[in-house]
Image (cartoon, helix red, strand yellow):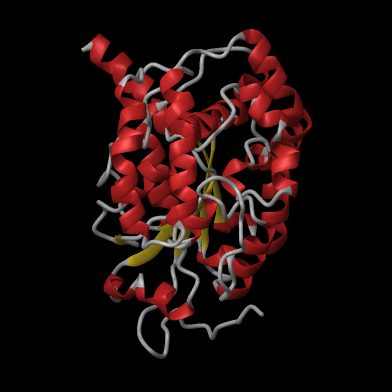
Length: 336
């Protein structure tokens, strides 16, 4: 049962609740935005990124069954007091916040946030859903957890994976259905408490994007003007190495659920490092055929998103090269 707290965000036993949340979307720059905002003296960002508290509701995480899910669940902060303690250092003079990009996607999380912190401000960063899905797939593939070497086929397997109990990070298509997610979010929060920011804005004009977030949160502008690199991984081509090491990583992740998270991370680092060793920082571009196949399920949802926001997302309907913080840095270096 969700607790509805008193008006004060402070807890009786210490700690406090957040004033704002970065709620989504995964692989859309929330890690980079979290790191940038943490540099602002008027803000306090939880040192634990993605605590996932509102995905649980004061109960242990669901018993997800995808590769590595059981191990990952150990890192969720689902106990009330542990969550409150995340913001204890914020004090009275700073706004406290955290970033869990799955909140936008998770229906129960949206409801829990509204019940627990109804005055919180929410920031949703949206990325072209095809680029987001591709980046999501590549993240898991490069780390040896994704068994399918083809992104289109991996997306086609999503329904079966959902039915089998794989965690939200495997929901490549579902995570990009922003229109339906935002529509439900606005049933719980007034529009003025929700900022929808485009990933492309963070990539192309970080200063303007960060100042827009600052105005939304009511803090000083032009204090933080740069976005650090996202948590990108090298592209790993299918090879004998991936066929050998991928199953080792997935088997180790299953065993890792019985170890402390830091122990499995230390044990898996050399194996994942071997996968990354021959990776290429330049990921292959999606072909027009691949992009068409991946885009089709999103078209109706993009129309809904445009209706809700009053903005055009026409660029998401056409074939083009993807964008990322890595490509931006490469382009800037070339210009420089």
